[in-house]
Amino acid sequence: MMMLPTSLILILAATILACDIPTSPLSNNIAESFALQIQNASFPDIHNHFLNIWDWGGGDQHLFVSPAGNSTSQLILVDGVITLPWDPPRRAVINGEYEVKDNTTKMFMTERGDPRAIYDVVYGCNPDTDALQTELSFKSRGDLEIGGNIGVRPFNGMYDFRWTPAGNTAYDVDRPWTKVTLVVIHS
Image: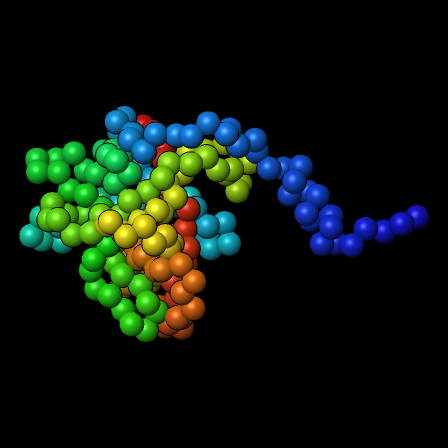
């Protein structure tokens, strides 16, 4: 009897379990209010938690992983930008607290004209249930379509949201950055 290598068995199992991804493109506008669920199955401290907002003063809302901050299901997506439709609107930007040690920059919500965090809306597979889900895939920082990744890292006993450019190899052992998937959850 021929034995298959473990790595081949895992590849075959992943192929069998993967959900079917539709090929039709999705709009980069979502007018129906939603919350953002955070996924990274290899990191239970944040997996399946939510993006929360925290009034940081001056009209800015900083973004934290639940339970820190205030939950929100009022987000919409306008031309790929996560938006709180308040008066005035707050938009997700990447422009705060750059950290040389891990080459990350804070993502937060503001009414100012800082470089917007722009996303594509894509389909993905839930890592726990294999169900089809709608995700936000990072596309650009303002007018620069440079890609990169959104993740979280420890901040005063909580986790805040940070962007890092594609190919970043910088690492801060004291505040490790962890890549996350942002999943659209309609209320």
